[in-house]
Image 1 (cartoon, rainbow, N blue to C red):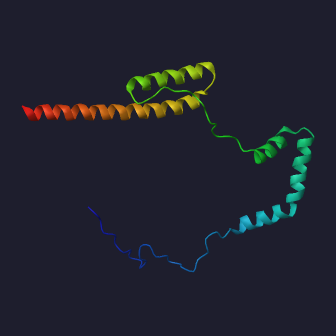
Image 2: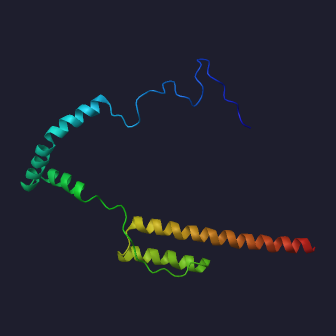
Length: 145
């Protein structure tokens, strides 16, 4: 049941701004503008100081530079030979292959968890299809009697 939205008592209507001439989107605050001006004036010197510190062996400076140059990888492609998963037996064999790959060091545990979740989703789809077929057969048998 849909509820009606009442007009507020202060006269503003829903969805209509009380200040349509307000700040444009993307406008930066005065604090942000001031910080950008300060950094812009010394950006080259700051960058040079961090690079010099990294060259001098400062590991924190090295981390700052490397984090900017090479972002950390979130995932990597994996290559695992899995059996056909079109049957419940195949799904079980695929789960065993994933466990074996973790044991051998071919897959990291997090990667195995993701891959297992995909295979489990396939198992549930197969189970749903099999249950649907069984229900249909039972309904046909019940209709005959």
